[in-house]
Length: 388
Image (cartoon, rainbow, N blue to C red; front, side, top):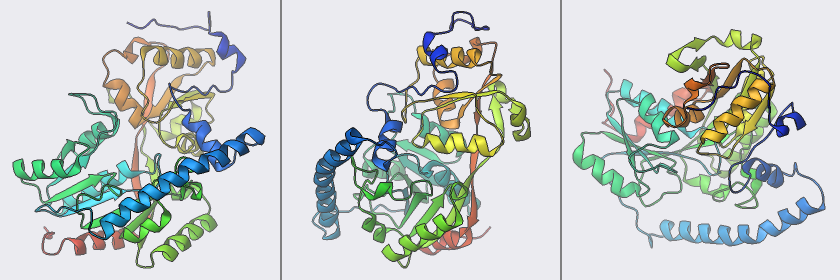
């Protein structure tokens, strides 16, 4: 069992050197620093030179993606259909853009229409016999949907339609997976970084050129409350310039409450009186920290890991020790991080008695365009969606 630390005695030296905040990275590239580099937030000659050098592999990557898309568009690479409609939820940038909450919303909508569905997901960093973070969240949040983890979406589609009576397939993170035909393409656009610094990987965050949005049928702008109205209008104008027929909706990620072990709940109003230490390993960590501040809290400190970080016992100990040193009374993470930690029996957070670990569940809420999006879905599945 992990040791229980309930005082500041023997606090690690690195904590003493940075009481306000410590940003820790996992092995490999520091994704948070990478975001600052490509966005231009990192300044100086070295950063400028590195941004310039990154344009070379970005150009090579851009050409390869354009060639692949051209081969699919011309029919030289074949797209395969299955016997049921397919709806894809995807994006054009790397990092967290809010696809998972939108998949959950879509499955809930299909359930209301008595449309049994299955979710096809690649399951990034999935271990044999165990779901990764996002598939685990989907399985818990969509108990009536079959969750199929397989990087080969076409094989997964054939398998699930052969063994189960499903009416719709929902392809998670499917915009670039063109081998499986889809009846509807919905993309998520993060209002905090909508177009990936307008550069392809690795010079920016774009997985493919913004012109690829011509293939999309709808765009859901996520985290619409974390930018200005002027910024939202500019995003929508650019989307319409690329694809005039695109259905555009605005959404936010609404915090529901705070949940700790045993499903114990803490009201959002109570957070204002809590001394919080935060940590996360998600694609857009700033969105999580910004949400906490918008709830009226000011975290004492935080640790930011890379997206899809696999937590170790040392990580949990480090998080707890820093929270103790800063005299926190709550350690808070995202649902994605919580799912990974609580699902690993080696990470016994119940063994840390002094400060409770908890997470902030969120739900997708539409501000505008939900009715148009629902109608688009129903129109894409003629004769298949019936009212109760």
